[in-house]
Length: 564
Picture 1 (cartoon, helix red, strand yellow):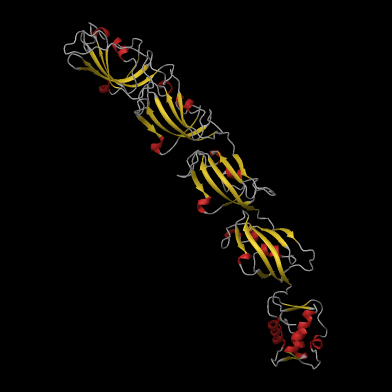
Picture 2 (cartoon, rainbow, N blue to C red; picture 1 turned 90 degrees about the vertical axis):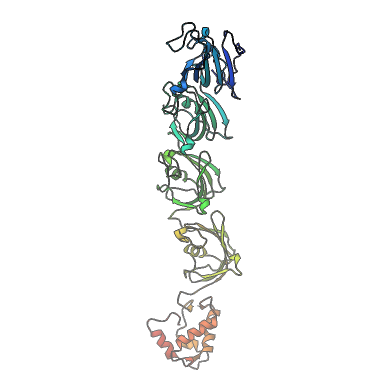
């Protein structure tokens, strides 16, 4: 019988009490405390649970009391299990209503009385407080308080659920609450872990849904009750919030939120990935976030460094991709959870954004975006170059740019002045050539990062070679581009006077460079280099080089690198 049925009309003969009342003809009912809300009234065949004090009308002496026994009275109404007066007087009563029911003898124990307790022809007065109503035909009643707009799945038998609840009796008296323990109640549905009424009442719920579930006694704890918390034959009212659910057969759920166009490479086992994430429970409660730490989470994929569900979900991702991952507890932290952070048997939801990934075996990737039609020489080790660049993370975050400075950057290739990957990317370029270069961290700043470069970051460079000056090997000031003159000294002695002063030496070297026969170290003043070379040949420091000095130098071992 529905708890929210309309009340049945009934009539009571109310006798006006006078100072010297005559014999009572019928039951007299005084409804001296009526609740404002009465969703259900007592009808014939209903079961009720109530407290009472029984007194004699004549002298007010008490003859019985459920309060004194500390246990409410339970009976069925209208089928002769109570004295006729009470059967009539309890009709139409509401839970939490208080009544005074006056019963004449012919509707009580008559002219005989009972057991030496009730004398013959006694008028009885019952002060009654109704605590509960139910009927053998009652079913579990469900009233939805609120429901999330999106509900992709509802609970079914064999699901494991985590929920919060407030439990009260039908009278409103609280008997239990998961909130007071600051912990959800966790159970499997349909496997006997719960009372039958809750097993039924929790079916079909969405995560985040709130319900009122009203369970009649025979689908709750029945005649035995539950310790001191739930009395026998009590209807139970649960206000439930479903926090989480999963099924032991559940697999990982992956939903792609955003996939960048032109994805040419996806993550595989063994890759190292950097990603941001927000971690929540199914009800939306946050438990962790890399954004709050302002640092990506970095790990190898498929090698057991993260929970099983995430390890699996990180496969097949593109740089820049966003995914939502729903991980059942058997692929996360299981029944134990993690301290106070993650409860046992919690389903975890991760919203992830891939910043970059690489493989420890990755080379530097070079893509030529522009190449001049004429390209007579290309950059190589020892060359002095000028180049423009933008250095970004793979998500487009700009880290450095030559545009932030007054002039392009300058470096000598092979001199270990830039990271290895950039050295690789700048090699083999023509003047005016532009490239896009992807540098994995083992070719960049490694696991430690540098400055504003994060740890283990893949770097993206946009390069343009502005100027190229061919160089000389490390330690040399001048190199011949072919065979040197043989013999050398007569070639140096331009005026044939058997001695070569600085001015003549300078003219000789300048002619060799001009005619493409030799090369000075780029990046330094030519006069300074030539003077240094001259001083190294002028052994006696007399301001001129003679043939014997030059021969002596050639014959020395080892020959200084900055000499002819």
